[in-house]
Length: 119
Image (cartoon, rainbow, N blue to C red; front, side, top):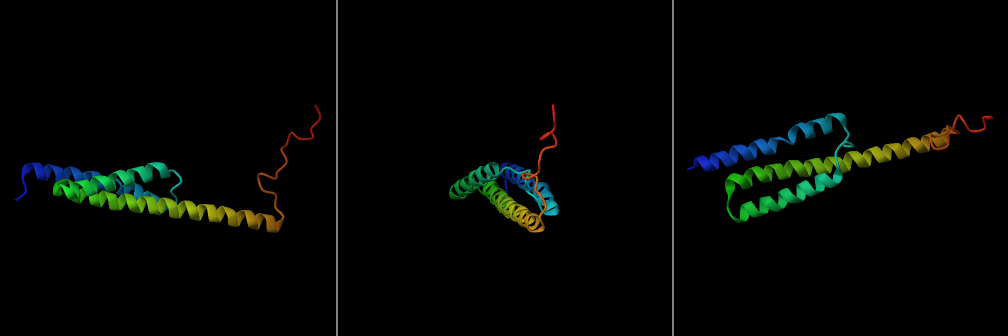
């Protein structure tokens, strides 16, 4: 039977677990994760994983189950961050190659307006 304390732990854990859903939805809709810090994501995932393992070992199921769900969501966030950042870098590289093939000057090759102007 679930005690009031366990119910409180489950409810709190579930609320914390679903906190990542809006960020995941935004990331997949925009197909971008540039606003998400990779170091935060990695540390967050690692901390959740260690806490989930600990909660499981001490059989604190009211905390363990929601933490495992949150760990899963944070893993998706981290994988999305890696995927979208890699895709964005590849796309930028492809655009640079296209610009070079077409003979279009890129931003780094452009001559500043004030260069060559007389004083």
